[in-house]
View 1: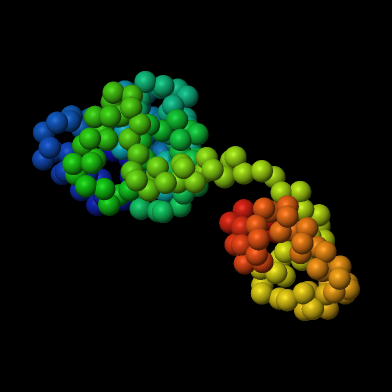
View 2: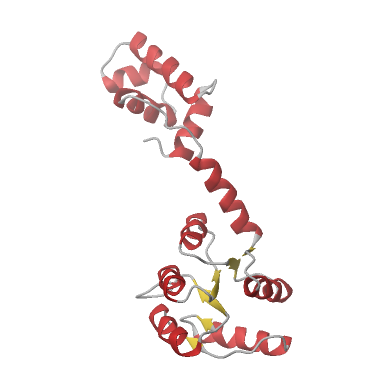
Length: 203
């Protein structure tokens, strides 16, 4: 079954699958809610589900389908490069996650994999998963509120004297905070500290 709010996208997928002569298309839906209703009637083996749709997006629809019809496999299709979508989709029970730019050969292989209960992830999705898993194991940095203030100004490129003036504290106090920040973050330079802070959303 194909689920996408854009008729042209659905038509394109129908044509592609028809040319392959490997699959039986049993239904189309233009929204997440419609997909859930059709699942109850048609019980497809595999769904190609668009991620971003109005009213009920594909991720929420997948969660509902996975809960009500656990045997149905869902492959998410997206044109977005937002890594968080991959993690959210997998949490909702999707079997596959592919870019809309994937090749016909890769799409066919993904459908076969999903039908067999095997994950089907694009290289971008795998990268997002790896990044998410690394981020989940990152230690919580115990920075004080003042240290976060200093770090934020460091990230803006201010030197110790400018930070001292901005926060109305002494130069030696700033120097102490900077040393403590570098130690807690496990980095050696101010640039590394600023980069890590931006990556981990520390302020």
